[in-house]
Image (tube, rainbow, N blue to C red):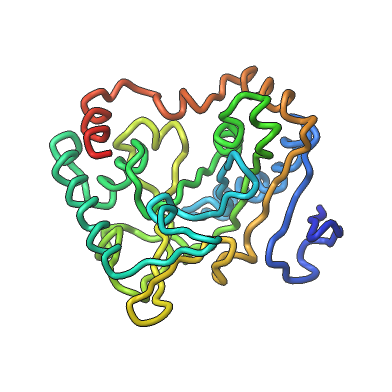
Length: 275
Protein backbone atom coordinates (compact mmCIF):
# COMPACT_ATOMS: atom_id res chain seq x y z
CA UNK A 1 0.00 0.00 0.00
CA UNK A 2 1.03 3.62 -0.41
CA UNK A 3 1.81 6.39 2.03
CA UNK A 4 1.70 10.12 1.56
CA UNK A 5 4.37 12.64 2.53
CA UNK A 6 3.65 16.30 1.95
CA UNK A 7 0.82 15.41 -0.44
CA UNK A 8 2.95 13.13 -2.63
CA UNK A 9 2.32 9.39 -2.77
CA UNK A 10 5.36 7.20 -2.17
CA UNK A 11 5.46 3.42 -1.96
CA UNK A 12 6.31 2.31 1.56
CA UNK A 13 9.83 0.97 1.95
CA UNK A 14 11.40 2.82 -0.98
CA UNK A 15 12.70 5.76 1.06
CA UNK A 16 13.04 7.11 4.59
CA UNK A 17 10.42 9.61 5.69
CA UNK A 18 10.13 11.60 8.89
CA UNK A 19 6.36 11.26 9.04
CA UNK A 20 4.15 8.99 6.98
CA UNK A 21 0.48 9.77 6.50
CA UNK A 22 -2.32 7.44 5.51
CA UNK A 23 -5.66 8.53 4.12
CA UNK A 24 -7.52 10.72 4.35
CA UNK A 25 -10.07 8.09 5.41
CA UNK A 26 -13.47 8.61 3.78
CA UNK A 27 -15.75 6.38 5.91
CA UNK A 28 -15.89 3.47 8.37
CA UNK A 29 -15.11 0.82 5.78
CA UNK A 30 -12.21 2.88 4.50
CA UNK A 31 -10.73 2.92 8.02
CA UNK A 32 -11.09 -0.85 8.24
CA UNK A 33 -9.33 -1.21 4.89
CA UNK A 34 -6.56 1.18 5.98
CA UNK A 35 -5.72 -0.76 9.15
CA UNK A 36 -6.01 -4.21 7.55
CA UNK A 37 -2.30 -4.43 6.55
CA UNK A 38 -1.26 -3.56 10.12
CA UNK A 39 -3.67 -6.07 11.63
CA UNK A 40 -2.56 -8.79 9.22
CA UNK A 41 1.08 -8.15 10.14
CA UNK A 42 0.22 -8.13 13.85
CA UNK A 43 -1.67 -11.41 13.59
CA UNK A 44 1.16 -13.05 11.69
CA UNK A 45 3.77 -11.66 14.04
CA UNK A 46 2.03 -12.76 17.22
CA UNK A 47 0.70 -16.16 16.21
CA UNK A 48 2.58 -17.51 13.24
CA UNK A 49 6.03 -16.48 14.42
CA UNK A 50 5.40 -16.66 18.15
CA UNK A 51 6.33 -13.08 19.03
CA UNK A 52 5.52 -11.96 22.56
CA UNK A 53 4.55 -8.36 21.78
CA UNK A 54 2.29 -6.78 19.13
CA UNK A 55 4.22 -5.54 16.06
CA UNK A 56 1.94 -2.47 15.89
CA UNK A 57 0.36 -0.20 18.49
CA UNK A 58 -2.28 2.51 18.00
CA UNK A 59 -3.07 5.87 19.64
CA UNK A 60 -6.06 8.10 18.93
CA UNK A 61 -5.94 11.88 19.33
CA UNK A 62 -8.86 14.27 18.98
CA UNK A 63 -6.79 16.90 17.17
CA UNK A 64 -4.26 16.44 14.38
CA UNK A 65 -1.95 19.10 15.85
CA UNK A 66 -1.52 17.34 19.21
CA UNK A 67 1.97 15.95 19.77
CA UNK A 68 2.87 12.50 21.02
CA UNK A 69 3.97 13.74 24.44
CA UNK A 70 3.00 12.39 27.88
CA UNK A 71 0.69 14.50 30.05
CA UNK A 72 3.21 15.40 32.76
CA UNK A 73 5.34 17.26 30.21
CA UNK A 74 2.58 19.30 28.59
CA UNK A 75 2.49 22.01 31.25
CA UNK A 76 6.16 22.72 30.42
CA UNK A 77 5.53 23.11 26.70
CA UNK A 78 5.96 26.52 25.14
CA UNK A 79 6.17 27.37 21.45
CA UNK A 80 6.23 23.68 20.59
CA UNK A 81 9.17 22.85 22.90
CA UNK A 82 9.34 21.30 26.36
CA UNK A 83 11.83 22.99 28.72
CA UNK A 84 12.32 22.05 32.38
CA UNK A 85 14.78 22.59 35.20
CA UNK A 86 15.87 20.13 37.87
CA UNK A 87 12.81 20.91 40.01
CA UNK A 88 10.78 18.78 37.58
CA UNK A 89 12.29 15.58 38.97
CA UNK A 90 11.37 16.54 42.54
CA UNK A 91 7.79 17.32 41.51
CA UNK A 92 7.54 14.01 39.70
CA UNK A 93 8.88 12.08 42.71
CA UNK A 94 6.27 13.83 44.85
CA UNK A 95 3.52 12.69 42.45
CA UNK A 96 4.80 9.10 42.60
CA UNK A 97 4.99 9.32 46.38
CA UNK A 98 1.35 10.43 46.54
CA UNK A 99 0.39 7.65 44.16
CA UNK A 100 2.12 5.12 46.38
CA UNK A 101 0.50 6.45 49.56
CA UNK A 102 -2.99 6.80 48.12
CA UNK A 103 -3.27 3.67 46.01
CA UNK A 104 -1.16 1.08 47.81
CA UNK A 105 -4.10 0.17 50.04
CA UNK A 106 -6.22 -0.61 46.97
CA UNK A 107 -3.65 -2.30 44.78
CA UNK A 108 -0.91 -4.69 45.85
CA UNK A 109 1.56 -4.39 42.98
CA UNK A 110 4.82 -2.85 41.81
CA UNK A 111 5.47 0.87 41.57
CA UNK A 112 5.27 0.54 37.78
CA UNK A 113 1.70 -0.73 37.99
CA UNK A 114 0.69 1.78 40.65
CA UNK A 115 1.75 4.59 38.31
CA UNK A 116 -0.05 2.84 35.45
CA UNK A 117 -3.24 2.73 37.51
CA UNK A 118 -2.87 6.42 38.33
CA UNK A 119 -2.38 7.17 34.63
CA UNK A 120 -5.70 5.52 33.84
CA UNK A 121 -7.44 7.64 36.47
CA UNK A 122 -6.15 10.96 35.20
CA UNK A 123 -2.95 11.58 37.18
CA UNK A 124 -0.25 13.23 35.00
CA UNK A 125 2.64 10.80 34.39
CA UNK A 126 5.38 10.36 31.81
CA UNK A 127 3.47 7.40 30.35
CA UNK A 128 2.00 7.66 26.85
CA UNK A 129 -1.05 5.44 26.31
CA UNK A 130 -1.08 3.02 23.38
CA UNK A 131 -3.38 0.14 22.51
CA UNK A 132 -3.05 -3.01 20.45
CA UNK A 133 -6.68 -2.49 19.29
CA UNK A 134 -7.12 0.13 16.51
CA UNK A 135 -10.83 0.52 17.30
CA UNK A 136 -10.00 1.56 20.87
CA UNK A 137 -7.70 4.23 19.42
CA UNK A 138 -10.48 5.28 17.02
CA UNK A 139 -12.93 5.66 19.93
CA UNK A 140 -10.57 8.02 21.74
CA UNK A 141 -9.88 9.99 18.56
CA UNK A 142 -13.64 10.50 18.06
CA UNK A 143 -14.64 10.87 21.72
CA UNK A 144 -16.23 14.28 21.11
CA UNK A 145 -19.55 14.82 19.35
CA UNK A 146 -19.53 14.70 15.58
CA UNK A 147 -19.68 18.48 15.09
CA UNK A 148 -16.65 19.11 17.33
CA UNK A 149 -14.82 16.18 15.71
CA UNK A 150 -15.23 17.86 12.30
CA UNK A 151 -13.63 21.03 13.70
CA UNK A 152 -10.74 19.23 15.41
CA UNK A 153 -9.68 16.74 12.70
CA UNK A 154 -9.07 13.55 14.76
CA UNK A 155 -6.16 11.26 13.91
CA UNK A 156 -5.01 7.74 14.75
CA UNK A 157 -1.29 7.12 15.07
CA UNK A 158 0.28 3.75 14.29
CA UNK A 159 3.63 2.70 15.73
CA UNK A 160 5.65 -0.20 14.33
CA UNK A 161 7.34 -1.78 17.34
CA UNK A 162 10.56 -3.70 17.78
CA UNK A 163 11.18 -6.28 20.48
CA UNK A 164 13.82 -3.97 21.97
CA UNK A 165 11.15 -1.30 22.57
CA UNK A 166 9.55 -3.37 25.32
CA UNK A 167 10.73 -3.84 28.87
CA UNK A 168 9.98 -6.04 31.85
CA UNK A 169 9.32 -3.64 34.76
CA UNK A 170 10.96 -5.91 37.30
CA UNK A 171 14.25 -5.40 35.45
CA UNK A 172 14.03 -1.60 35.48
CA UNK A 173 14.97 0.64 38.39
CA UNK A 174 12.01 3.01 38.27
CA UNK A 175 9.02 3.90 36.11
CA UNK A 176 10.27 7.50 36.20
CA UNK A 177 14.07 7.58 36.28
CA UNK A 178 15.49 10.90 37.42
CA UNK A 179 18.66 10.57 35.40
CA UNK A 180 19.56 11.34 31.81
CA UNK A 181 20.40 8.44 29.53
CA UNK A 182 17.46 6.15 30.20
CA UNK A 183 15.59 4.82 27.18
CA UNK A 184 12.01 5.29 26.08
CA UNK A 185 10.37 1.93 26.77
CA UNK A 186 6.97 0.25 26.33
CA UNK A 187 5.48 -2.18 28.79
CA UNK A 188 2.26 -4.10 29.32
CA UNK A 189 0.76 -3.17 32.69
CA UNK A 190 -0.73 -5.92 34.81
CA UNK A 191 -4.49 -6.19 34.58
CA UNK A 192 -5.11 -4.55 37.94
CA UNK A 193 -7.71 -2.02 36.78
CA UNK A 194 -10.55 -2.47 34.35
CA UNK A 195 -9.27 0.16 31.93
CA UNK A 196 -6.12 -1.83 31.19
CA UNK A 197 -8.24 -4.78 30.12
CA UNK A 198 -10.89 -2.79 28.25
CA UNK A 199 -8.37 -0.68 26.36
CA UNK A 200 -5.85 -3.43 25.49
CA UNK A 201 -3.44 -0.98 27.05
CA UNK A 202 0.30 -0.63 26.61
CA UNK A 203 2.21 2.23 28.22
CA UNK A 204 5.28 3.98 26.88
CA UNK A 205 7.63 5.64 29.37
CA UNK A 206 9.09 8.79 27.86
CA UNK A 207 12.44 9.97 29.17
CA UNK A 208 14.06 13.33 29.80
CA UNK A 209 17.15 14.53 27.95
CA UNK A 210 19.67 17.13 29.06
CA UNK A 211 19.82 20.10 26.71
CA UNK A 212 22.30 22.27 28.62
CA UNK A 213 23.42 22.86 32.21
CA UNK A 214 20.28 22.88 34.35
CA UNK A 215 17.94 22.69 31.34
CA UNK A 216 16.14 19.50 30.32
CA UNK A 217 13.82 18.64 27.45
CA UNK A 218 11.64 15.85 26.05
CA UNK A 219 11.23 15.00 22.39
CA UNK A 220 7.71 14.23 21.28
CA UNK A 221 7.68 10.74 19.80
CA UNK A 222 7.35 11.97 16.22
CA UNK A 223 10.64 13.85 16.75
CA UNK A 224 12.40 11.02 18.58
CA UNK A 225 15.04 9.57 16.20
CA UNK A 226 14.43 6.05 17.57
CA UNK A 227 10.73 6.07 16.66
CA UNK A 228 9.95 8.79 14.12
CA UNK A 229 10.56 6.60 11.05
CA UNK A 230 8.25 3.92 12.42
CA UNK A 231 5.16 6.11 12.78
CA UNK A 232 2.12 6.52 10.54
CA UNK A 233 -0.65 9.06 10.99
CA UNK A 234 -4.13 8.08 9.77
CA UNK A 235 -6.09 11.19 8.84
CA UNK A 236 -9.82 11.57 8.19
CA UNK A 237 -11.89 13.59 5.76
CA UNK A 238 -14.47 15.87 7.38
CA UNK A 239 -17.19 14.01 5.51
CA UNK A 240 -16.14 10.75 7.22
CA UNK A 241 -16.94 11.90 10.77
CA UNK A 242 -20.64 11.00 10.89
CA UNK A 243 -20.04 7.57 9.37
CA UNK A 244 -17.15 6.84 11.75
CA UNK A 245 -19.22 7.87 14.79
CA UNK A 246 -22.14 5.74 13.60
CA UNK A 247 -19.80 2.78 13.13
CA UNK A 248 -18.46 3.12 16.67
CA UNK A 249 -22.03 3.27 18.03
CA UNK A 250 -23.11 0.29 15.95
CA UNK A 251 -20.31 -1.85 17.35
CA UNK A 252 -20.79 -0.58 20.91
CA UNK A 253 -17.36 1.07 21.19
CA UNK A 254 -17.33 4.23 23.29
CA UNK A 255 -14.76 6.23 25.21
CA UNK A 256 -17.09 6.25 28.24
CA UNK A 257 -17.16 2.46 28.46
CA UNK A 258 -13.41 2.23 27.93
CA UNK A 259 -12.75 4.70 30.75
CA UNK A 260 -15.34 3.29 33.16
CA UNK A 261 -15.58 -0.47 32.57
CA UNK A 262 -16.08 -1.18 36.25
CA UNK A 263 -17.15 0.63 39.39
CA UNK A 264 -13.87 1.33 41.20
CA UNK A 265 -15.29 4.08 43.42
CA UNK A 266 -12.68 3.92 46.17
CA UNK A 267 -9.84 4.11 43.68
CA UNK A 268 -11.52 6.92 41.76
CA UNK A 269 -11.96 8.98 44.94
CA UNK A 270 -8.32 8.43 45.91
CA UNK A 271 -7.15 9.63 42.49
CA UNK A 272 -9.53 12.60 42.53
CA UNK A 273 -8.09 13.71 45.88
CA UNK A 274 -4.66 13.93 44.28
CA UNK A 275 -5.63 16.31 41.49
